Image 1 (cartoon, rainbow, N blue to C red):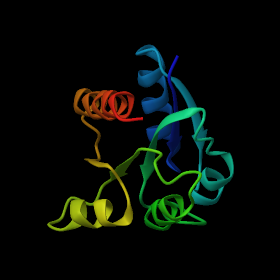
Image 2: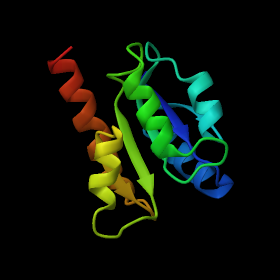
Image 3: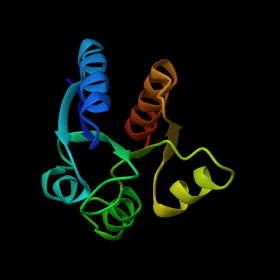
Length: 126
């Protein structure tokens, strides 16, 4: 089974996404803020990190930068989850180190496609 790390401070979003992902066969580990995400991320376990960008303690932008700067986590796939849908926000997330970008409210089918695309890409290019 594929494990994901869902980093989301909003309890409703966390509950909804974790339940839906679990029903699709994913193991979902969770962190409620950026500091916790940096502590619990295990690149050997987590195939993809779903990263809210507006987090307490350490925001998602900084989490992404720190993960990219650390050789142990530099290649861990990150999907930004954000309510920021303004022009330039996608580029900002990608510049911070995210591989993909998904706006909230999350289009679940599109998010699943992005997760699977990243997983296939990583399997093809270890």
